[in-house]
Image (cartoon, rainbow, N blue to C red; front, side, top):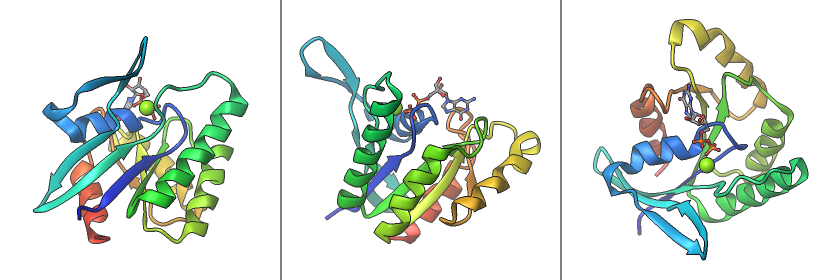
Length: 164
Ligand code: GDP
Ligand code: MG
């Protein structure tokens, strides 16, 4: 069966934008609760003859800090339990924050393959110096991407499919 790849990370790093770019035209909006519209969270993606299922996590972003943290933990755990490869997204604009480290700890303990991506690197010359900080997460080489500018996405997918 097709491998499952999950995108995890704290709110606002750009998970859903990356998901939507990869899902492309086939993305659809579904309503799973009356009165609530949310993006579909599963998509079929193909890269270099590899087919896989991509999962977005996060859904509706909660507004309380406590809920954000518990939801992040829960989503990281779901990703760990269901995914074959995890895309762990952080954000160069905010730098390395405490909740990134907490998610990294869970992922490291899981021993699942993780591809660490640093999003919002829209300008490589400008932001590359800030990417190196994420080596401190101890979870591998940080890969710069821009979901908005579609930069680094091919390199990221190459890394992902290496783990299938
Ligand atoms: P999520 O909460 O992790 O799913 O994040 P979203 O995908 O909802 O994105 C949060 C915000 O960051 C939105 O305003 C996006 O447009 C913005 N964003 C996402 N990716 C990029 C990027 O590569 N560059 C820039 N400049 N903004 C981005
Ligand atoms: Mg989202």
